[in-house]
Length: 66
Image (cartoon, rainbow, N blue to C red; front, side, top):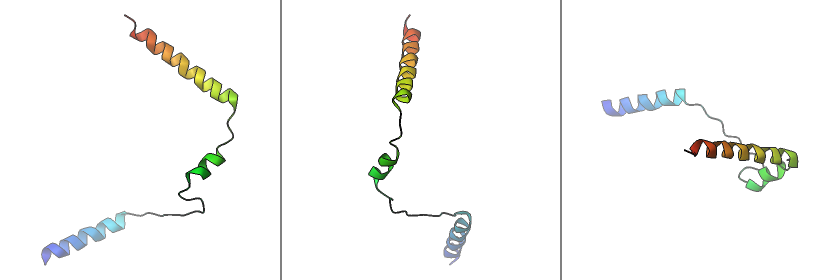
């Protein structure tokens, strides 16, 4: 009986400390809806990111040379 009371007490304490909210929207679970809203990319930004990655790769290659 003491074990059950202790278990109930522990679960009750855990419930006090845990708080969560779950909100469902009409687009919940639809991966295509996220991609459709992110269509505002510019070619200049993509080119700048590509150039940045390319420069960092060249730096890494220079560091690896003996």
